[in-house]
Length: 384
Image (tube, rainbow, N blue to C red; front, side, top):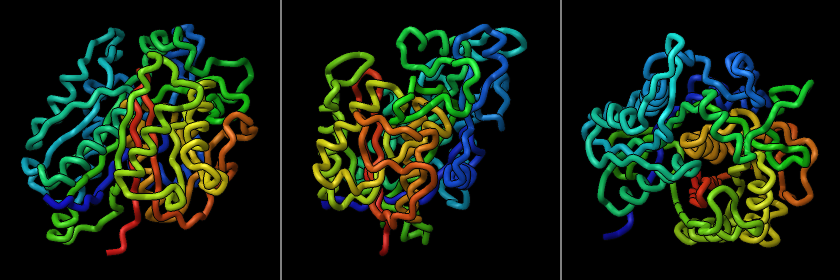
């Protein structure tokens, strides 16, 4: 069967910077941060009290994880007029959560959240669990199924509700979270690729994409936001918590994505980086980009949004894919907020201070998860 072209016709984003895609995008271009100090973490006496919280849905709301995901899905489906039973559903709900309600901790299973969302859709129903790469993996799986003619359209993405004392305590021994420093501005707790970076900041969020074949989109006269032209995966097989210093697994993933898209590195106009703000992770990712891109890395703009919204874990890749999609549709690359003193070991063509008008038409977005799972996806502005 001839490979079909795959496009995105809807997006939905819920993050620390807003309740929808446009609020997120506008805030990123304005250089705003959604990270703040959370009083409940202060009251718990934790050494880490900052986070990228979604304020639109209070943290003690019953079934907050499902409601956040549904809000993103509804935005992605807005005006589509699809019969939901004709859509596949590929989603990541991340980890089980202990939610605070009326002074008690209530266990919410990730599988239960997924099941309650999936019942409104048709087949396939696939739950993705590849750590921080999950959101991108979900979109990539949808792309592959549509490309090969297995399905016509799908909602893909992820959601995460992880800003609880339970997970702050749980992640702390891994030495990957940005600990509080007395007198420091909480909005600057996450500094991707910066010499002074000290880890990432946890965040809640949800990102959804309506992905379909080009034929399906044209048949219903849908507005096409961008085309997905490549997807690739790899596995580090190295260490549970850290990538190899040379970023070999990430490099392989990017190369496979370029091969799937039949592109050369010179044809990538911008990169939306995973860029978490960890010492080892940022260094390995920068090494992977330099190794893959050769001499062209010096003129390929790189940006990470985690300094602005935090690390939304299983939804991070979906939110970042939406930003990459906005970049290729507008040509504008948002800045890496809080990157002020670039680490020499993370040398890249960073977008610092303010957004860059790069006329970027083809954008690579990367996601590298704990446990060594790597994913990357390429979006391209569509002209026909």
